[in-house]
Length: 65
Length: 182
Image (cartoon, rainbow over all chains, first blue to last red; front, side):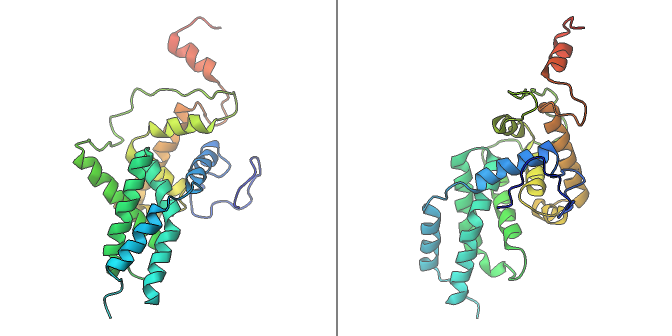
């Protein structure tokens, strides 16, 4: 979604203050995001949802009233 | 209760980011998923200590990071710190000039000391501010800045990207081998 076509010069400088060191226009900055986005979009194994369901059954949260 | 499933839903939504961070730290898919699992269990146990309205993602990343380092210590593995190592760096030459392959980048990232790698990931990829990253890593903002800066410089060195200067692998190879080019 937030994919930026390479070469697109971003007018918005640094949303989070990372621009001074890792500009979105820098090769390192772009590769870093590409590397990470690929990891984030990886399919999540079911075991994690199962784990959370087990935790929820074992110990219903929000014990403080 | 409704509040419970809310927390659960928030944790579920955080999993892709947690896995990406865990992969970046451990560089190993199995260890990464173990880290995420531990993080979810710990987060569930500690949920009463989470302040609603504060940054859940940062809270979870902090738990995951602590888990990563404590596992490393259990393994008896010395935690790398940036000073003093990596003096001998291996250059990764882009397979195509001018085009940095993602695989090359991954290899370069692997060569960074953990503290630098986590800093550059948190700031450059996970979307945290310097302040948040400092809190996650339990250090000063200035420390994060310097780690990010060193990480970036190191990556540029390893990958032969040096600002505007457009020397390719050949120039470096010539230097290293002391060849009689030119």
